[in-house]
Amino acid sequence: MTPIQKLHLVKSTLSDLQVQPLANNLIKMRDLKQVYMSHNNLSNNALGMLADALAVNVKIEEISMTHNDLSLPNGVKIIRALKNMTGLKKLSLNSCTLDQELLQELVNSLAANESLTDLNLYSNEINSEGA
Amino acid sequence: MIAQLLANKVNLRTLGLSNNYIGQSGAREIAAVCQDALFGLVRLSLESNLIGNLGLIGLSKAMIDNESLEELYLYNNELDDDSIDNFVEMLDNKRKLRILGLEYNKIRNKAEHIMRAVQSKPIFERLYLTQNMIQPTIGEACYELLTQSFSIRELRMNHNH
Image (cartoon, rainbow over all chains, first blue to last red; front, side, top):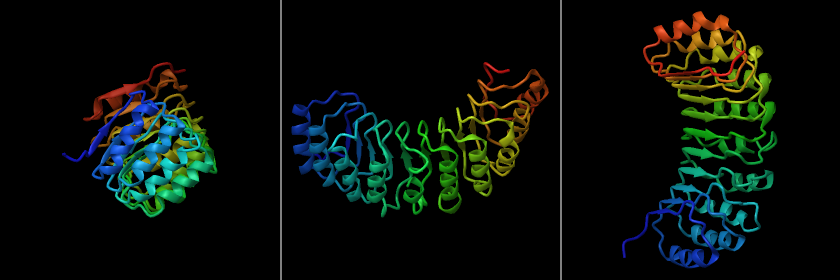
């Protein structure tokens, strides 16, 4: 089977039933480089399953999860999964309900990353302390 | 926190923080890291962030040596003429600047200074000044921009004065 490198599932209204097999397969396929999963209204369970799958996909270079609510309890797992992606270049988390606590998690996850070229955090809840 | 995150991101080309609440002090924090670490920044988006004049003055002073900036978006930040002198001074060495977005602010007569600052930029393409408080006296500067710039493609000035 050809390894998947690009995953585009934008505005797909992914249900938990759809995310589960997707996550199970992503755990086995570790060649992902680009992940676009914006506008999916992902549930807390879906976020948890995807976080586990993304955490082992350390080759990811671009990830866009815009317009998903990462303030749900498992949202932080998605942010923590970014820590393993040492070659991450492009990150978009627009409209993800990021508050100062999640922002601190993001800071921790990306602390060692020196490859980032694009960071987009539009429309979150970042105040002067967050800046 | 964002400034801390960016402190070692020397390859960063795009920073998008629009529609947050970073305010005047947040703008200064971001500006400081732009000055200290983001030497190759190409696109900076800070729209709708309550930056205000003092924030823009801080940003302008910090970005004065940056020569990589191509796109700067400052839509809806409560900016008026008081911060434009520092801003124009910062624009002076931005030879790669292509797009400048300043819509929904309160800029008046000093829009003229902005127009004169960008008209000699070799690849400047788009100036957005819609929904400010620009008066009809801007006509001459506007004419100069449109006739002397070789690269201008778009000038938006709807809903002024």
